[in-house]
View 1: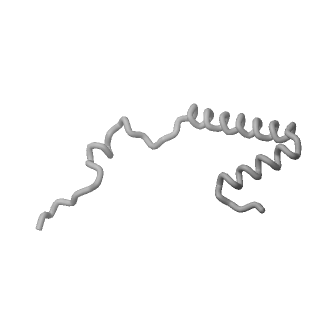
View 2: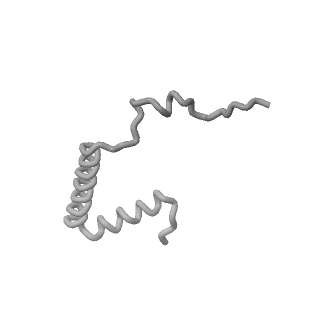
View 3: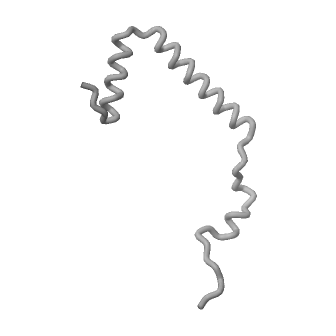
Length: 70
């Protein structure tokens, strides 16, 4: 029986310095700024949209997800 253990990922790939699981500050700030901008857009858009428009949007979203609504 072979005594060596085989892995799905070679040891060279796991120890490579170019592969990093750390998230830099700039990446986190970019994600936070993007989420904030998207949230402001949705809240502002819903604030100025009419009730019928919001109803139609929710109705279409339910149909798109395959959920019954009537």
